[in-house]
Amino acid sequence: MAEGAAGAGAAPKIVLLETLHPDAEALLRAAGAVWPGLKAPVGGAAAIITRGQGRLTAAVLREAGPGLRCVARVGAGTDNIDVEAATALGVPVFYAPDAFTAATAEHALALLLAVARRLVPLEAAVRAGDWAARSGPPGLDLAGRRLGIVGLGRIGRRFGQLALALGMDVVAWSRSARDSRFPQAELGTLLRGSDVVSLHLSLNAETRGFLSAERIAAMKPGAILINVARGAVLDEAALAAAIRSGHLRGAGLDVLAEEPPPPDHPLLGLPGVLITPHSAVLTEGAYRTACLQVAGAVADRLAGRPADRALVRNPEVL
Image (cartoon, rainbow, N blue to C red; front, side, top):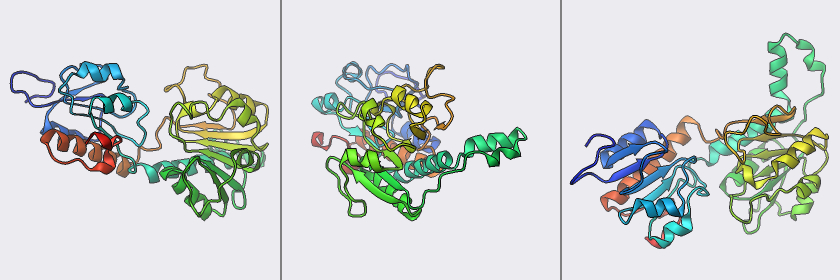
């Protein structure tokens, strides 16, 4: 059946809100009729897949109707899916919890190195013919510095491992997770004593605004903040104020609360701040792997094959 077609005896309708790796899209076209685009109608869908922009609320899930067999997010986070509503409907939520771990941790390290060594302004100065920029403020050496990891999931642990390889002293805070490589620190102690604070929290009602203005003010003077988790876990206005005042040295961010940001966002154009467009996961290998994992899980579900429980956010529905 042609893409986007429907009719009597039609193949299962798969609503693909955002593009995936071509190999994954080919797999989905073999499994059903693909309806692409953020504005694709979800009524009658057997599966709905998003990367992050598309939000699968309870209303969207109900609109899909009783034939909805599964929904999916190509990523480790599922904050743009109402998992509770999906569970109530008996609909499994597929995701890719580990496909992006290494890529995201490496991106966090790249952000840290770039901010600590002032790579972006130095490179821009050379392009402008200003070789004398090398005589400006010196970069920050990382060996022997303390990294405080906030949130000790897969990515937080991998980033901590990379930091240990650089000779950093790594401590961590988590409500529940523990790792013998990273001593557990009380949150206030971590913020006051860390030269770098890196956020690795999933976004939920408890973590929204977690790094508040008060907690940012408690950070060690001259510290660097790294965020590859979700923009809404921190107070971005307070972060901008802390950098403008000189309290913090800088920040490396791959995520913002509003994406793309408005032109007047307080962090845009601020010296010492490096922002990338939620691209930590977009490496060739990781992106393909995650897309194929999720597309394969959807295809299996539509064909009646058993699901890989490691890819199901709410396995209790199986």
